[in-house]
Length: 40
Image 1: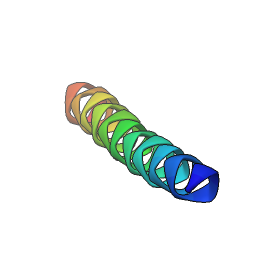
Image 2: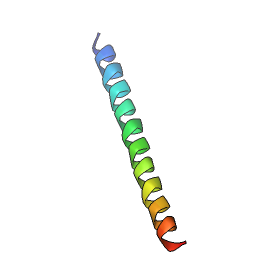
Image 3: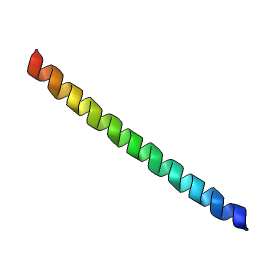
Image 4: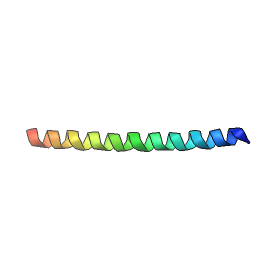
């Protein structure tokens, strides 16, 4: 049953990483958008 523990850990870490990268992408997009708006 030890591998199930590792599988759950992997699943949750993968979900956390994808959520964090998605949030980072959204933040970068917002920064670029405001930068473009200010210079146009």
